[in-house]
Length: 202
Image (cartoon, rainbow, N blue to C red; front, side):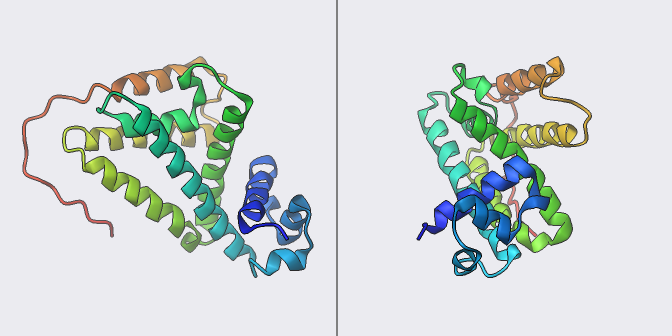
């Protein structure tokens, strides 16, 4: 019997290759090479599978972000730079096929998360929890935490433009924007000390 992680990896492959609409219990079972009963033993419904898949993928991404952040000798902006390196491996120089595959997964899961939110916002809870944890870790760096979040928001905006067809991966502006944001990550604006602000998630 396949491990739960193998089943979730199969679900990710289906979504990144065929889209969220193709994610069915039958399709994932076929992709994983197990019976539908073997899959429903772990995930009784499609919603349960989607929630677990997003949780599994978020954990993978956070591990990668933490790894790149730890290896970055420059403290300023290193966590948002790590996010960019995971989602856009071309920023790291040499790009292995596995890196390009992971980048495609990041973007496709981003789009799948948007689609899932339309159908059932509760499915996004795992992603929201991990994103909130990452946001809080950024804000623990008072000198540039908010700056990193602003760049993060710009990155999400770029991905949304791609989803809407306003820009493509091959558009020169896409690479220019990425490089610009990457450079900005190490140059937070000089600010005067201010009173500590508590950010509370609603």
